[in-house]
Image 1 (cartoon, helix red, strand yellow):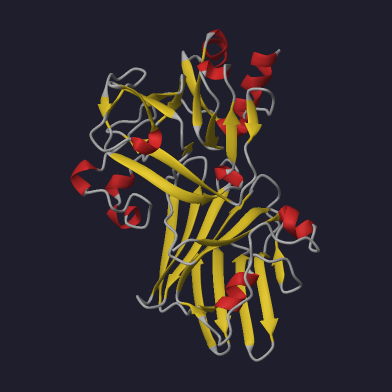
Image 2 (cartoon, rainbow, N blue to C red):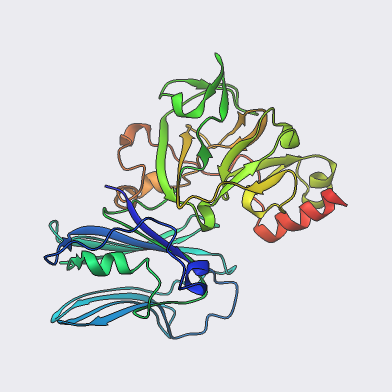
Length: 361
């Protein structure tokens, strides 16, 4: 099971260029994708412009095939997958966000299990809303591949940063954010994050040593919130460069955070920091592998000399049905922690940019 394709707005603006993911010709014989997922991230910072079609794939040769994601006039989100006379339809009520936060939308189907799922995730707050539907129809592989290929049959709203497809039911929820090779400080010394195991004791910034409850490893589309960012040494106290996802939060402390936010330290997303010597985009590959550690409480850990936060799951453990659809589904309930508050206040993206301007002045 793997991610199959990826398309972003750059691909759509240059339709004559080859997509950035190697594409094989569709197999003959009308092969169906029995289980799969379509996921995309969308900005809500601009006018909603509703109603509209966020994603539209429409093709008719031997029969009518259509895949459409609608943003309706009542701010609900609906997805229609039509294959000839067969149709799957699901609707998720009001997806508006109070602060115009970006959203990740995931439509997954498992035809053999006769179950599908539509998920909207607020990327700033971590809030997850879902709608389950029955008897999803599979998608012809030819159409499945076409969803990430520029062409006349595919239209994607410019508010969508990227769209990716997977040949499995893609997990939702908290994601891994730390690239391989980053050295995590344990009570036994620094260790590459990919070599950590449950039970290893990690040094935390304020809570003392804490045992690793789970090591999360994920392959993710390297766009939007999961775009790889390189943090450069010696900034942030780093002893060596590390690669993290854009949503990995870094501890920023000092007189300026005390003066402007009334806190000794705050957490800021790496992707919201201005691009300069300290923060740079990493290699532009379509997909990337990330790791993260889950601790009993939300803590800040030492990563190659910099303090960054561990995986934050909030109250997810109290919603087992939702947790079962995430990348943490395999965690036994007795060790699935509840995180009631982050280790430090978390800055919004605009607050991070304002603080960065102050620090660079």
